[in-house]
Amino acid sequence: MVAEAPRLRPRRSRTSQEGGSTLRIGSTLTVAGVVLALFATEATASPGFEVPSGNTTCAILPPKLSGEEAPALFCSSTYIKKGAYDGRGTVRLRRSGKAKRIGSGNDLLLYIGGLNPDGSASKRPVLEYGETFRRKGFVCKSRSTGLRCKRGAHGFFLSREQQRYF
Image (cartoon, rainbow, N blue to C red):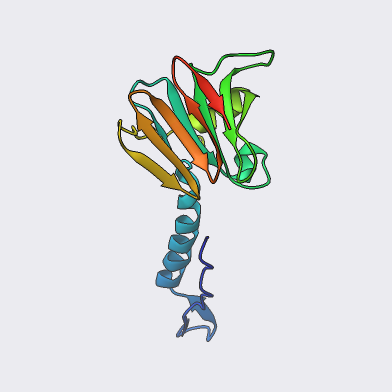
């Protein structure tokens, strides 16, 4: 949730020669600071992680990046068997319903990997074995035996040996 910016009223001072009013530099800098603070949130990648093996990367992507109606968890992995679709193996877990293996193009993979909306990149933190990632109702547990993510009763498990979607 983005806080609404306060209404700013510029300070006015009388000029000695013309009797008009001018804005003080301090007010201009304050407005510039508020604008920069609002855009600074756009420069960070959405929440996500990478497993220690480096074979799976996950992110909770907002609707404007994922094309979904609500934030959803996306994980791209070398473990997901590729089917008759383009791109790398990816699984999507929405706020409701079963996890689903999907095809993903380059843009989606870039956002999962940490591309920021401003074009810069952020390295995803490593979710060490035994650690749990909790954000926006999604819960992922990294273990040496595989990665399990869920939201409510639905989710998925990914490992080299097997992939389950429930």
